[in-house]
Length: 248
Image 1 (cartoon, helix red, strand yellow):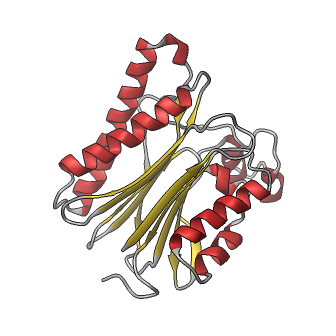
Image 2 (image 1 turned 90 degrees about the vertical axis):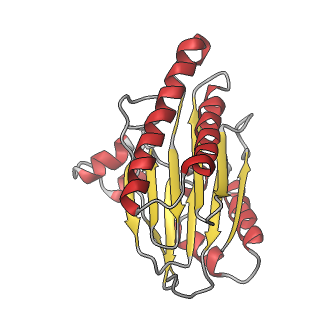
């Protein structure tokens, strides 16, 4: 497996509130995650950093020889603990009131692949040369689309398209959606909405399927988002499982 991750401030924001990581443990299990922070006075940056730092260390320290169900429980418990840490920080630092973060995370082992999300950062998988979005955005607009009150077309430019219904540091208790993925995948890509609001899924797919090194593909995706306005921070975590082969 090969991996690469990168975050970029974008063209509009004055600082970067995203955090991103890819780590592996001694058994070569992988954890990859993207967190998109929110809140003034750099508080969003703190929330995303707390999330990614805790996830990374906790994975390397405690994730070992886990069954699929144990991994699901581990992920739920870990997210709950991170949520508590963010609320605790907020209580100790009143200037950070209102801070929070999205999270999209993937755990990749030889036996299973899990993707989880809270908020509107996205998880994608490549199967048979087709890129699929796995996660469901926890936004007001997506809720209205699901309820039949908005069409997909109306949702694209809706003025409240970025209003979140769920985020770490905003909901207590917090639930993470967890998706059990097929094993015959070739790629996993996680991204903040700074990419997905600027670049459509078929365009992301085209870049991933093109010739070249994975680092160059990630940079190209970030450049595309910036060339189209770069209105938000852009973060990508990319894992190549196998070159068009079945992961068994």
